[in-house]
Amino acid sequence: MSNNNPSDDFDDIDVVIPDSERSAVEGAARELLALPAVKEDSLPNLTVVFPLRKSVPFPSLIMPVHAQHGYETDIMEKAMAQGKKVALLYAPGMPKGGVISKSSQFARIGVIAEIHKRIRLPDGNTNYLCRGIRRFKVERFVRVKSVPVAKVSYPEDIYPAGDETGALARNVMSLSQQVAEHQPNLGDDFNVAALNIDPAGHLADFS
Picture 1: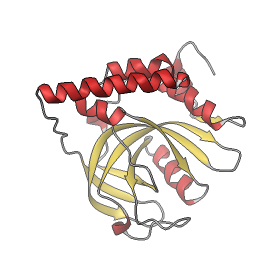
Picture 2 (picture 1 turned 180 degrees about the vertical axis):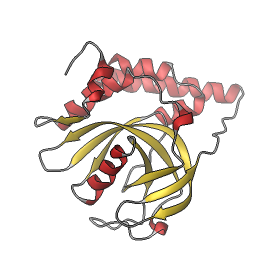
Picture 3 (picture 1 turned 45 degrees about the vertical axis):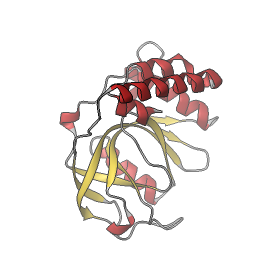
């Protein structure tokens, strides 16, 4: 993998990592931080939906999405084939080890993300390194079974202004720096990314 131009490495999105899942994700995340932000005017209104079992996604965050072989990897591969955009949506009603069978098993607010790397794991499962772009609202599901597909809209996030918001943002920044000091593996890129996040709501998502 080249260190000269990180963006060139994303042309080959299929990366096989036999050694360490963590080191693979951390390396890919450092490359991802060097890439320009995704233009929001290119976001899809009809999108493949990936069900998240436990985590809740946020805009602007870099996150490894773990997909079990079979149903979940099929969804992510379909999303990659259709432009590398995927709707990450919490699915509290998804049965453990099962598949989504009805739309009521999904939440209604999620985050549209761009898939940047596919990292195959020794156990046959796959991590997909994604960067959150913007929150979406599900208008309706076009399909639920097999590969879920939904029609979505993108409501505007509203961030309150004022001295209190500024003070809270500075507090979040200070806490983020403390986390970075105790986690050397995050590297300098973590603080650089935090310093360049605007507005304050995105900083809260980041932290």
